[in-house]
Amino acid sequence: MAKNRKVSFFQKYFCCGTQSDIQEPKTAPNTYIITTTFCEYLKLNKKDPSLYSLQLLDGYYQDKVKKIKTSHPLNDLIFSETLTQNTQFSCPICFKYFNYILSSCCCVNQICHICALEFQKPKCHFCQNEICTYIDADSKTQKIYTDSQGMQLLSLQLKQH
Image 1 (tube, rainbow, N blue to C red):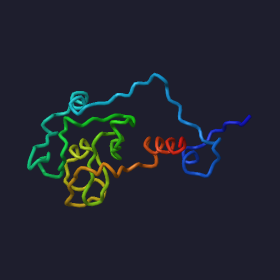
Image 2 (image 1 turned 180 degrees about the vertical axis):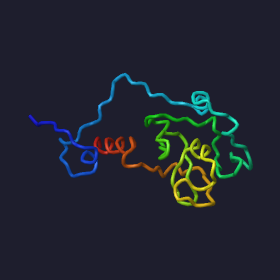
Image 3 (image 1 turned 135 degrees about the horizontal axis):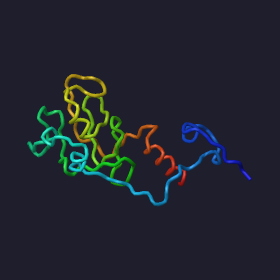
Image 4 (image 1 turned 30 degrees about the vertical axis):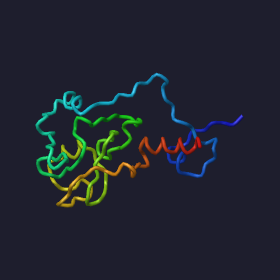
C-alpha cells in the first residue's frame, strides 16, 4: 500500500514528482459559493456610490478622469472569493475573481474595476507610468498567477485528461 506523504504546493504542481505524490485539495461537499454584485458590494462595505460612477460616452463607460474605458457597466460586474464558471478572471490586487477584468495599456497587467476606481492617482498601479488607461482585457488571454486557485484548477484539469 502506497504511503500518502505531504508535499508542498510547489512540489504538487511544478516539480517532477510521481503521480502518487499529488494530493487533490480537500473541498467540503456542501459548500456554497457566494457571488456578489457591485451594488451589494457598495452596501456591505458602506461605500459612497458617487465615487464609483462610470458615464456612457461614445458607446463606452468611462470614469471622470478617463482612465477607465469599458463596454461593461458596473451593474453587470459579478465577483466571488473563489473561482467559478462565471467569475474566471482574478485581480492581483484584491485577490477576488470577476466576470470582467480590465487591462492596463502601458504594461498589460490586469486589474478589476473596483481597484481601478478606488485608487485616486491616475498612475498605473503596476509600473507607475504617468499616463495609464484601463480597457477591457481580451477574454481569450487570461492571466493565471502561479499561486492562484486558477493555477490549481488548471493543473487538476490537465491531470484528469
